[in-house]
Image (tube, rainbow, N blue to C red):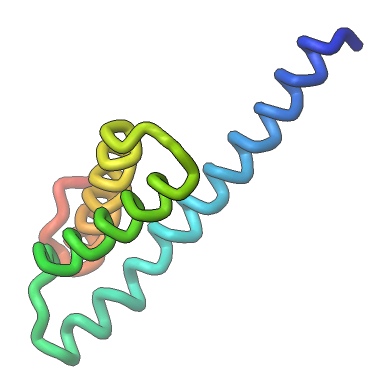
Length: 95
């Protein structure tokens, strides 16, 4: 295996880990939704969304990552969680 193939294999493994973490994060939506129901919190909690994005941006700054890209990624993750919570509550757009 060439060095490039080896690097690509490592990237593939990391991609699988990232996908597994995204799956784990989205699957927490059920527990989040239940807590929100108990506390009377809206599914789309803008204040918490900002906390999550700011936390990610602070960590990205420490890692010297592109802040615009990290913000976009976390906005997508938040949207995925909101969509899952809406689906679980019967308000989703998913079939």
